[in-house]
Amino acid sequence: MHICGTSDAFSISKEEDSEKKNVSAKSTFACSVTAGASSTTINENQTTELTYTGCDGGTVNWTSGSTSVGTFVSPITTTTYTANCNIFSPTEFCTSDVTITVIPCIVTPSASPSSIFNGSSSILSYTGCETGTVTWESGAGDLGTGNSFSVTPSTTTTYTARCKLDNTSDNPPCTATVMITVSAIPPCAISASASPTNINSGQSSTLSYSGCSGGSVTWNNGAGSENNVSVSPTNTTTYTATCSPSGGGTTCTSDVTVNVAAACQITAFANPNVISLGQSSTLGTSGCTGTVSWDNGLGTGSLKTVSPITGTTYTATCTLSSTNYCMSSTSVTVNPIPLLISNVNIKTPVCIGSKSGGLEVFLDRPRVAGEAYSTLVIIRDNKFVAEYSFLGSSVKTPDIFEAGSYYLIVKNFTAGGAPTALADKSVDLLNPIGVSFSLNKTDVKCYSGNDGTIQIAAQGGTGNY
Image (cartoon, rainbow, N blue to C red; front, side, top):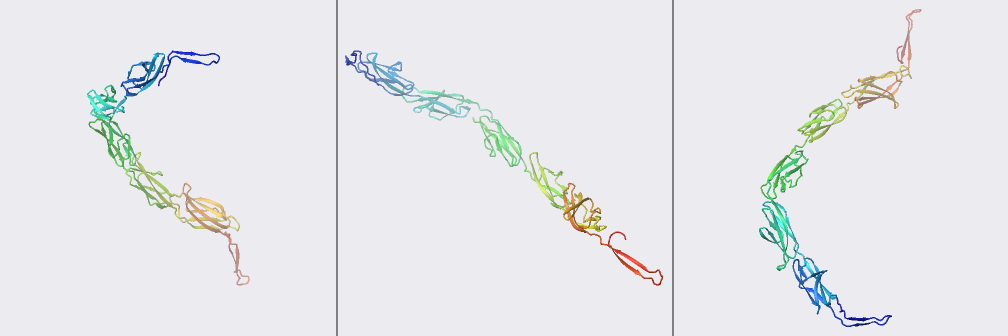
């Protein structure tokens, strides 16, 4: 850009009160300058020469902002320079700008890993220096060029990445360093463990290890390479953790055994599994290699004899350990023994309409084990009449019943009140037959004789005549 100025030889007159203005220039000079450079794009640390055209008959000085600079400049960042042209005096001048673009020299090296054991390698790499070439150096001299450069130092070493953007002598390289720390290979040590070490079939255990710092660990038996890995062996298994030191050297191992208890098995049975009330059944088990215990208060032991009074389910538990046990159940069905009213003795009421009749009921069997008592319920016309409890195989009622049809129900019960058997029978309690008389006579054989007889016979009724 340029700015034009004029000399101070001007004559300017101005008439007041809106008179026509007269401006007479005694002399006019054109100031023109165009700034340039030998190279407007340079690398960091390079030099370029500032140039210009124009400014005929004048002088040019260069500035960058408020700072005067020479003709040859080496900016470290992109910078704009101004050519100041003075033709007659410092106060009358023109200017022109030129911008020098600086390509920075930046290289950032890294090492992976940055800490190794003696005998291991590390990869040197860098970022930046996109338009240049990187040469790697160490105290031993140049190592070569390129990215992803492998080194195997025996001691802690600092590496220098030297970036050169071009091959000109006036373009010194930029550098940066990275250090690789080398340590002696530690002794290989590893300790394997399992929690818990004793499991049941189907359960799991966690394999862990300690030690092998900086190394890698692998488990055998397909357990992988992680720490705290879960396994579920079906049989007792020994697991080996192998440590491979990251810096090389001899591997080391450690073993741990996970003990798997045999699967718990038990089958409960009852023989026979169907009984009649008062009979017994034998409970047993098979398959258990541990301790067998039964519910229903039967205690421990494989074989038990039971005499349930009602259908009962029995559960056997096989215990191999506090965490390894299993159960099996079996049931015994109890059928009641049939009960019949074998006979009923009836006492007829003394008189028609009187409540003086009675019943004596006989059963076909006594109570069996498990039966505690019996009851006799008497019903007439679907209405409750009386109930009697008894312990034997027969029961006699008081003489308090009038003639009529009665329905008898006998039930046997356990001590807890559960019915075990039932019998029923209908009976008729009849009124007594009415009393009738018959008369038989024998005449005397001779007059005034006393050998004649009279016999009166009574029938029906009750009691003595």
